[in-house]
Length: 155
Image (cartoon, rainbow, N blue to C red; front, side, top):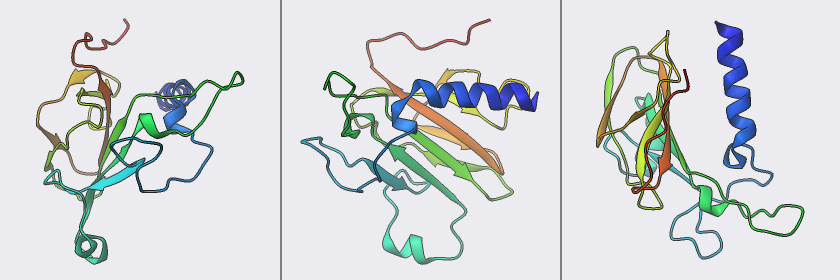
């Protein structure tokens, strides 16, 4: 089970250049994008404040990786882009409700990994405005276009 889980994570990372960037994140707007390349969020769906970064009580946070800001090209010089991802981490032992920030390309968030579902962690589902993040778990959401069908798990 652990080997299968790890193999699927490795394959997923290989599929997505946004998860294996060759340059450090800048935390700012990159190449005419409306969004920064990386942003950090609290459970209220708003960017983390300086106070939250310095407090000792924050145990849950979100990290958004914008797929439109890769600042990379392929071998032919074509610009590379990818889906945007939102990783939600709960280091606290109790469940936490997390308000989702808006996706950077005006799409919708789709859950593609939820470690609280031990038997089916890769079961895909469309996320609502809020998600319940169980204690000590990770949820990975991927932005998809509004007019595209949701991804479904292959049987």
